Image (tube, rainbow, N blue to C red; front, side):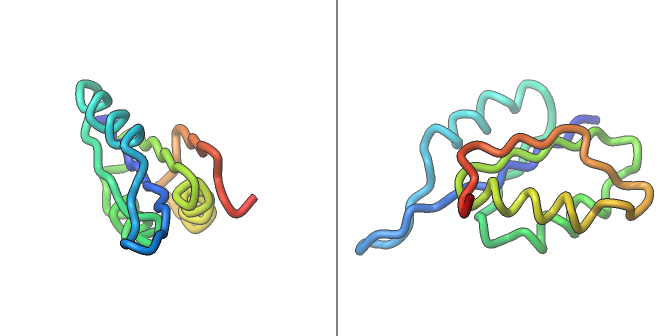
Amino acid sequence: MLKVFIVLGALAGPDGSAVSPGMLTVAYRLTAFGQITTYRWTSQGEVTRDIAHLDPNDKIVLIGYSGGGFAITRVAHQLNGKQPRRIDLLIALRPTPT
């Protein structure tokens, strides 16, 4: 089964934080292909735990935008070498910090 984990970036402003509506559209459109889960960019520990508990045969896609792009590289690093988990596709869109 295909599992897609989208880690959103956030813009902080005087009235709170907001995520990219474009990434929410991507998440919605990808639901036709498998299970999609979205997280805040600060949730990398939760993402790592959720992936580690999946069936080893699941295909894993990590997509991150802005701070989420940075967070997914850390998730992939934490999972690297821990059998039987691997990331099949990692997509970092405008990751920050660079």
